Length: 360
Image 1 (cartoon, one colour):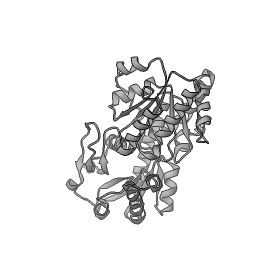
Image 2 (spheres, helix red, strand yellow):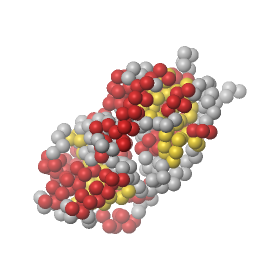
Image 3 (spheres, one colour):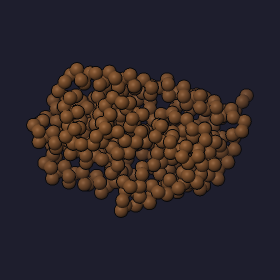
Image 4 (cartoon, rainbow, N blue to C red):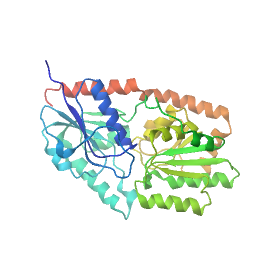
């Protein structure tokens, strides 16, 4: 009987609800469903997250094997990078994108970002193939001379909403307001402060019953603290809800009670919450940056980052049912590209190619 092929994954860290961590878990489920053995290996577990139910192992437990494959989830400086490059396994780069260093002037993340790009460039010859989530990330891989690059959005599990429970307290509390949602790590490049600016502008212009949900863990504590202070200074404490990390049921509830998803992020390697919002049939408006045009498509794409302009676009959705329904309909057509069957098929075809390649 032929032995199963092992295709394992490694990421420097894992955290509850994090996009890359969700990707690790989703990919593992696909690999097992497609008949491969698969384990997840990490350097450390985030201390700033809720408990993780899925099984994972630490990289010091890893046993290299030239007959196995290792998918390396890469997005930041990794203390185990040199070690992993020496592994005899056939390695596949899964590039989640590195946030550019200019977002982190004067803080340690700038050095981390620059060093990660150095690792990405110098290790190109260690990989037999690469996966990116978007055309945006693919362009960077090709610039660094990566070969056999495939675009497969392996963050997207369209079945994820099944079996989630509604938080009735949240539902009752915010059922009567027009709710704007953003989901993602609280960090400078996500520009959550610009979301607060837009809400403030709407309030100044007479829009009273509007709430803003900023959902996500505090990846950079100083910025997280700044958002609370900024909200207080603008007198918006009751209207801006900054949640920190939430569990799956609360996240499900925030999507259910939201009337609009708004992203003003200036760097996204993919933007998974945009797909999640469209799965909930929430209209999406998002600033044109990074991979957002690939993820969202052309409908709902904001070409200008001007508070007055964005406020007017929001009101077109809020006050006109026809505009709202038209936007949702167009975005639902684009969403089909990311459904589970399509993603699974693309990944399966990629795996057939790399596992049967005699030169790998």
